[in-house]
Length: 355
Image (cartoon, rainbow, N blue to C red; front, side, top):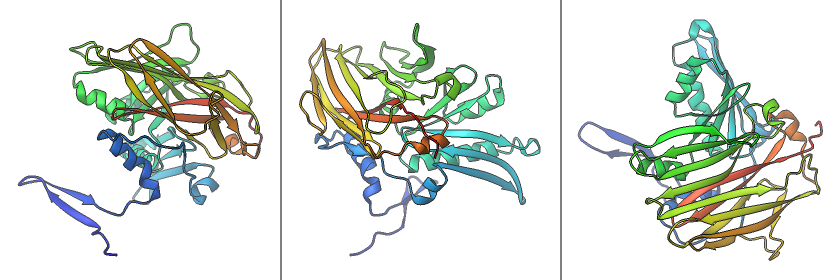
């Protein structure tokens, strides 16, 4: 079989050019190529749930953590850690630059390296925590596209780099404004909102979990719900993940999880729920006993609920969580409707034995 060229130069004007690498897709590319098809209006629904791919042996041996350093003339001038266990969130850990090497762009370069590595491993967002009064860090991360979210003892900031619904909304509403507010009378919940400036359209994501391990009581961050309003309310959809409030789960346990959709718009909306699960985790519907992708359809002013049961395999190894910043297990769900795609998640609180 004739191989594809490794490098192709595409001319895009008299004074500019782009360097594009073309290669044969492999199995690891499949989720991203499917996402391209959905974004282009692909109508065929998935037929089964997906599992997050396992990390390579080297990454696992380092307990899903890697340290990157920046050297200047042989001197280690800066470092950062990347914790990337299960999507959707990877975490940037403890970015440090020696004082005599600051203002050289080393922190920016290390942050970008972590973002590229997390994206390559299938993560959708990168979050970090910094001090409330570290204004230099705030400027750096804001310039790189991070937005402020939860705050307690620390400030959490998040950057979405594979989250089509956010990208679509911001592209359609160039003057959109962002803000984040704590949800009243709710512990550890924040609304991340993008509002159109000239219309009443908006996109809201519900972030749950504290800004640090102590703030969250060991429950990692999760995007547990969304509200999407566009076309001046012609399309208005809410989606929410709500698991049982169960703590210290162990292998062999199961958890009930409801996915609720509310259609407040003026037209029928239809799509599918596709769970994306860690290996050793299964899902079924108690109503139908099905374990395949779940289709949904909501008429205007209709609410629908899809009940699920998340089952933890009796051989599931929870000891790796002992090494992580959070002892919880992320469970993710993608829902698709007419070319739109969004990833939501919840975090299950585990009983974490030492390794």
